[in-house]
Length: 164
Image (cartoon, rainbow, N blue to C red; front, side):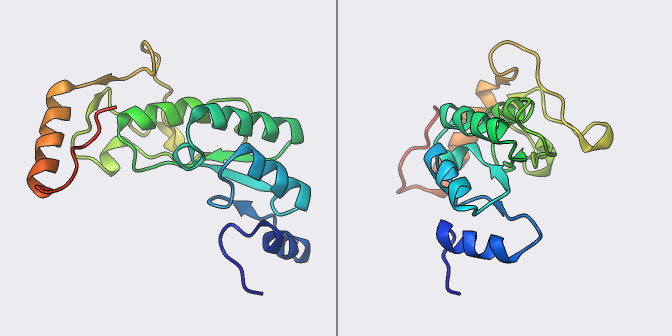
């Protein structure tokens, strides 16, 4: 069987042959893809990565579908700065997320992130959901500017980095 990562039909054929539930990831890029994948029987578990589906509005739609259909759900995201990491942690704390998520501590990828407080692994390899205003972390402007300067040094002919 020849398949590409987004071939929901081929995943459905494989899922019917297996006792082990398939967990799809890159194959699901929207709530529409999830509904189609479930209708075809292509998955039994979902790994949701917010950047892959276009943001948190789509994530909330996907989480609602998983909750409604009792599809086990977990959130993945490791390379984000503290801004994206805070949003991913908030998403992973929703009741629809029923499996342990794959969101790492800040220091696993950054010596010094652009936000405070840092995400630190707690007991049982858990991350605390920030409780500050907004997303619960504050951008450290000096660190952001230093990161932008490093980027410009390494990419003198490239586009300017986005500061969101």
